[in-house]
Image (cartoon, one colour):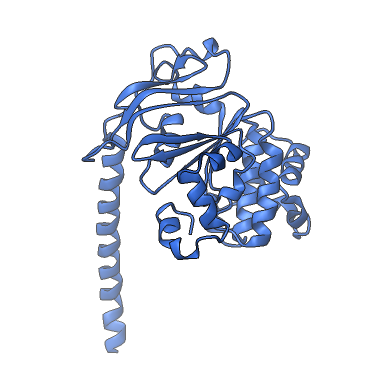
Length: 308
């Protein structure tokens, strides 16, 4: 009898808690919607003026809101069209910030970044991002089917295009064995897939978009050995004849890069090919020796460079 009397009160209490929680969440959501826009588009985008898809940083400084120091400090660096460029550096050296600036999630505090000689400030965010594909260290997939996830890359993709993208991403082998194939539901954040499978789905989605510029944030770093090989093979197929900029934690993934940039304290410390940097006998050579096992006692330095 007592339980029956208490039950309505528990229900009412739960309902009140839900309303209060919804109120707080709604307030936070509206705060985000009403926040000031920090990156403004020009009245007329100059995307048609772009003759090539190479980026150039000219005396770029950048500081995050509330930050005490510049993350990038008078950075001058050039990523050539159609070349594979790599970024190496300690945590906090500005690697991820550079990728964020290239996507125009932020604008530089001072200095300028150009694409084909046109300032990114003169390009709308939508026009710029049409050219860019981004593969993160942690793959982002959504609840729904594999097909629905891929169509975020190209909404009107045909079945043949989807299968081709999956094949190029080394994902068709496992997708074709699923009972419902591309119609398979993968659960919230892809919970029904392994890390390597999610990453290959993410790459296939980017392949469908077919971007001319590819940004990689160490796409194989969190995977097991077998998945790393499959994902690396997929990326190598995809990077040909594109402007590729990769943040590297493992030097083995960038040994074939056309140009490697070593960052330190927001500036450029060294640059060159893998062979040239080894001959330079500087920071890059030290990191290479550590990763190749010559300096086991220096794992602390390796950790500082996010390569442990």
